[in-house]
Image (cartoon, rainbow, N blue to C red):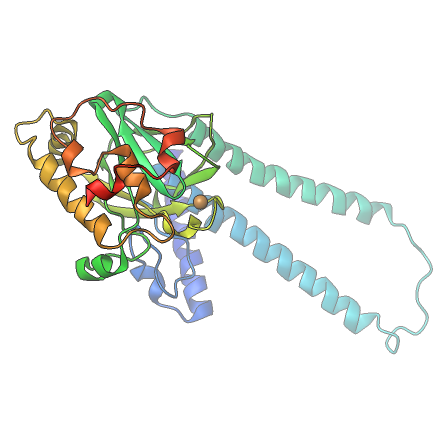
Length: 338
Ligand SMILES: [Cu+2]
């Protein structure tokens, strides 16, 4: 059943992609960038998680053909009525107003179409809900206007992820307004549970290539999960209008091998053999921030949490009450970070 489902999926996805590229004369479909938007592309961002594959199948193989068929059918009816029943072709209109057979049909057929869609839709919803046993938990907190990531089980206390300034993004050849000063790092082929919350207003954590989008609501913890199948860098954005810099709080997720992840955790938690590197890493990030503060957010956030302040980097001690309310305030230590 599963393999037939996947075979059908590959076949229909191929047919749909072929039809779409023929229609648009576009060849960009096969060359879509991974983990970020592709200029001029019309298809969905390609996926690297099982949920995303299923969501793309649902859209391309179930919804698109149904929408296309219904649209063409209605267009045909309109043309038929315009041609056959206009005043010249049909000077004496019929006087009847009810037809039981037609009314039963136009009620039942849409119901059946919706039930058919619901079968696939609920299957997908349940898949999102039924998280496998997680290998890793990351807490993502939305702030005005940056993200904070914390790994409670690895004792990696919260660090701040700001948008990378334009000159550095260009210099590093990474996408401006998607790249960050410090990414969220996860191991490949592992089930990652993401706990999502907001510190000030409602934000939303969204990574298209993972097929996840979850509201980040103050005072509440939402949950989602993903299992990235390949190593790489995947970008997302805040997806809930949260204020003036809403467009400047990107999400960057780096999927790495388990060994690389372990090394990263050792550095970040200050427990590994090369724990001193943390200070260097963070010094680099702090330098990055200081050259050009994020627009309208004068470096208050990072300094407030202390995570990318080199002075606070090593040795890592549990942070004092940094989160939530204090983060939005300009910290008195901000100038000292420079
Ligand atoms: Cu936002």
